[in-house]
Each structure stands twice: as C-alpha cells, then as structure tokens.
Length: 328
Image 1 (cartoon, rainbow, N blue to C red):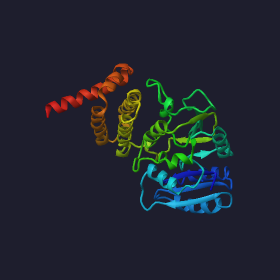
Image 2: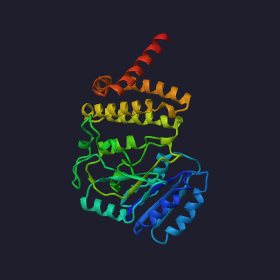
Image 3: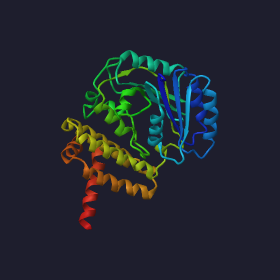
Image 4: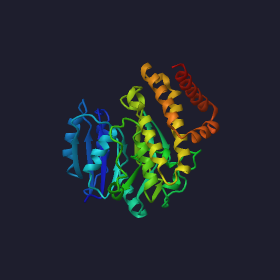
C-alpha cells in the first residue's frame, strides 16, 4: 500500500505539464503513488504523460489513465480517487507545481497530528509574481473540529478556502464517501466538496506549510473564460444549500451558506464584461431563480447586512425577476 497517492488531472496543458511532472519527480519516493489522469486532451499532453509515466516509474509508483471523453475536473479527480491505493491522498492540478520535498513534509505532518485531514497555505503564481495565500484559520498545528471552522457566517472561514490541493486526506475519508466530487461539475467543484468535508469529517488541522504553487492567469482556465460552463457554480451552490439544509445544525450553518452563495453571485454580476452576451443573460436569470430557492429568512438577513454595493446588485436582480413574472 503506498503511503501517499497524488491525483493529478490534466487537460490541454502541454505548456505547463512538464513543470508539473518535474516537480513530482523532485518529490518522488518509492512509497508514493502518482495517479496521472488525462481528461481526453486534444493537444500533445497525452504523449507528454506517457513518457513521464515511464520515466517516473523509476522513482515512484505511477498509474496513467486516459479518459475516452472529456468529463471535467471533478470527474477526472474522481477517476483518480477510484484508482488510488494510498493511505493518504492529495491532489495537484496539471498546470500547477510543487516545491522539492513538499510531499514528504505533508505526509509527516498529517501522520504526526493523526487527524482526518490537514490544510496548508499556498503560493499564487501570476506570470513572474508570487504571493502567499493563507488558509483562514489562525490556530496552527493543533487538531480542531471541522464543523466549528465553518462559522462565523459573516467572516471568511475554512469552507471559503476550497482548494482541494491545499492539504492531505486520510484514506478513511475516502472509505466514508467524503472525498469524491460531484461528477460533471465544470467549475466550483470544490465548494460542495469542502462543505461536505467540514460537516462530516471528525478532525482536521491547519499547518503553516508552503509548497503548492497555484498558477493563475492560464488562458485555458475556466476562470478566464466567460462561457456557459462557468454557470455550474449555480448547481454547485444549490448542492451546498440542499445538503446543509438537512444537517443537524442547519439553523446555524445555512446563513453562512446563503451569504457565500450571494457573494459569489454578486462577484459574477460585477464582472459581466467577461461573459458572452447570451451567457450573461443566462447568468442573471439563473442567479435570480437561485435566490428564489434560497431560505428566504436567511436571504433577507444577508441582504440587510451585506455591503451596499453587493446587496444593491442582488436586490435589483430580485426586483427584475419579480417585474418580469408580473409582466408575463
């Protein structure tokens, strides 16, 4: 049984895959397993991965899997989870990279703490610029309750730091069904996942360990493309609301879920210039319908306490829906 499985999905990243793969080599151990999943790339990525899988097998255990059709990041990660054999698991995206020796430190940390999962800080890389981004939990290196880290509702908390690759996870979470993503989600796939993890896992810790370099500004990234795939954030946050509504602490947790959902809607509405015109129209319609589905008491509280700029955008959206329905 490998000590650690690293699940790495790739899709059309020929420019960046060599850096990612070289960083895996600099982290390799013979008890580490690299699960490389090509999500039906249309460029030279599969050829790069085939060569790398052969070369990396000298220093680590390697599994290379290629999808017959493109399924998106969530589905590719699930393929990797189904194939992974490690006692611990972590993720890396195919256009990001790791500092040398980071994985060994990560495994040593979660073993020492003995918790279900650990979360780490990361370095954001935009062209040549580098900036450190901290997990929003002040207490470091101590085992905590994941459920308690969801709140308070009006602050940035652990569920807002949704990067799956910023941490490591014990296999018992996989066995309990807590590590799989919602198949087919093209964006915001980490959101239902991080909420489920914090509601249902028993223990976690946050550690001041830097080693993941998150590449921003990649032209092919969905965060840079204003097409309909980005609208999957609606489906992702609907899932967060629906699942949290059935939780034993729904009264406490739903205000946080609604506030976060509203903040994401407001963010997308404020950046409409990136959207294709038809998709922008669809964004407004779907967002208005989403607000109608939210728990209305929680929504009213959010609109009354959120800053004026964002609450005004959301109120206008609600009025527009009401006016359109009245006219119909």
